[in-house]
Length: 337
Image (cartoon, rainbow, N blue to C red; front, side, top):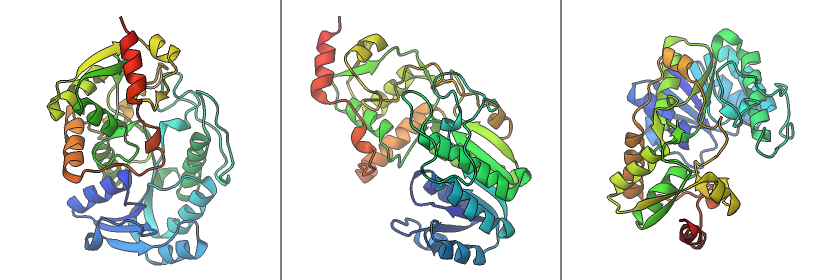
């Protein structure tokens, strides 16, 4: 199988390239070459997807059985690159997000839930950020989905909509923050209830599913999450304590207490958000065509092993927002009954 990966050096793209190499596929990556970990294992084409000359050179370097686009964020650009590749690639797999849904994170979702509208040729300014609702990122990704389908046609296009993606090489740093905080020991401020269901998907399971859709010729749109009610926040933090051999104890603070103390959801306490739709994304359709999700404990253990082996700390611009400060955590803990 001849695969072209647009991106391929960071998180999801890296997992897809790694899985394809392991499967014996012939892999080409297209990126600016600022950080390429694969060296001679792949055919590396250098270029910027925003430069027309580079895209034309990429198309001239084909053909491929499939393209996986992990770096498409602006509809107009996705449309241009997909149109250039349509004559030389069999299928187009676009990596999208549950943020394209009108009701995320407010209400539970299925694959058929209404999505945001964005034209397939929209520029980077289309859409707007709203408090606790749709974001420009979501609008833009929705437009990219339309662009991919317009260029390749429905039968040759697969849209994947992952929710929260965790695992080794996570650059935002949500799970790494929890692992490091729990490893430090002591009393740890925990959000809400240990019984709160969560459904993050392992980045390697997302990658495997992307390749599965290519191998099977599967078209359509799929939510990619772990099963609803398959794991809990308590399972997550318990696994963090287990794999780090920590003596940490957890003080579960009600949502109302955290909100009244001004704790920022999703960032100061990673993966905590109170809306009922956050962890209620139905992925039965994807599991019906081959999505398999490993136990959350394995994701936690492998992420810790990666941290220990590499000493990795995230340099991503969003990483600085992650995690509650020690002083604020201590103050809230002291106020709990």
